Length: 131
Image 1: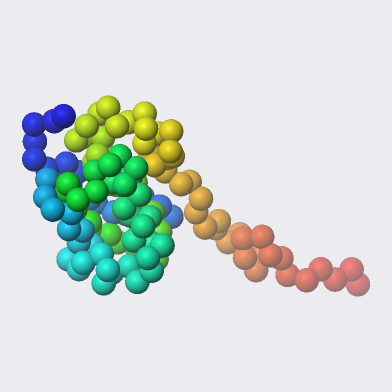
Image 2: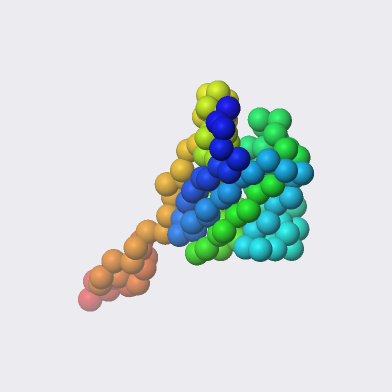
């Protein structure tokens, strides 16, 4: 366990970036200065953000402040999950194998494919006419 009382982690997903501050506390989670219930309307997204805490049995032990920007709320939730996982490792390096095994430390590489010139989109083409 580290001796510092604040642990920082950065998570990314698609075009979202979440900077996460973990500090010992009562379990409050603030996302962009709002309670998690106000920021993420869906229980699924709130559960996704809390997954690393639940998995490592650290729920209710930390106050978490998340600063998320870019992308949509789903990718922000994924970015926050990765940031929390990385901050937990700074708190206790022995959690790393468990988090790694459950894929909480893997940055999701999927992102929107760029549109190509001479085409309608990334994959879609204009209609082909033989004559």
